[in-house]
Image (tube, rainbow, N blue to C red):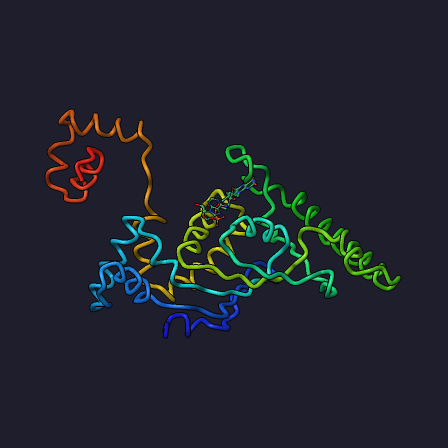
Length: 274
Ligand SMILES: Cc1cc2nc3c(=O)[nH]c(=O)nc-3n(C[C@H](O)[C@H](O)[C@H](O)COP(=O)(O)OP(=O)(O)OC[C@H]3O[C@@H](n4cnc5c(N)ncnc54)[C@H](O)[C@@H]3O)c2cc1C
């Protein structure tokens, strides 16, 4: 049993104006990760400290397969443009509501006023500063009008007995859809890293944050190790490492490195002596 996951199961986390994330099912807990890793050398699970230490080691050394032994299953309601990003994660197992089979509910995403921003000057895919309040209001009014008209057209076509699979083709990307999403813990953490990053679209980031709050509660030791060694960690390029190594070798930093064990660890990594 996983007490953290049990606490969150069927708990609806609202996301955006009408979306949500719900944990529906799970497999495993932190101990399952350790138990899978210990199959390698035919030993069971130790005490809590042992479990924490081994999870930390596995995460640090990118020994990823034991994390794949755990699974989470979610129901997600999100606008189609968010799902279009989500489905790029090939390790997710998905089932989506069929607009050929069922009539789609008139539910579409309308951002809040402060979300309406100019094109970012530094990130070609992102948003920058807020637009003027007038421009934002106009955008939101137009979004509501166009979405509502698209649904009027959809309902009109259905009333004219046009098949659902064709009637739906003029619905916009902000229409809400639903999916059941299942993924193993390793790839879910990878998804979280990519989709909570500042460079990811704000809307998918809200779903990734909801998912990560469930992972954090269900696999607390794994989450701590992930935060330490992956999420909040940085990688240096070859050039960056060599430049830092030059400074360390010049002796300028010797005094401070000697007295600080964390700096010593960094220095050893940069010199590749560990
Ligand atoms: C900020 C951001 C912007 C993006 N912009 C765009 C864009 O403009 N256009 C666009 O098309 N995509 C875009 N993407 C999607 C991106 O290119 C990836 O497809 C997506 O992030 C999934 O990443 P992934 O392949 O690592 O994850 P997953 O598909 O979940 O795979 C996880 C890991 O499994 C392995 N794997 C899975 N399947 C295979 C396979 N068939 N072969 C080999 N290895 C595999 C890989 O190691 C992979 O890292 C963007 C993603 C982000 C985060």
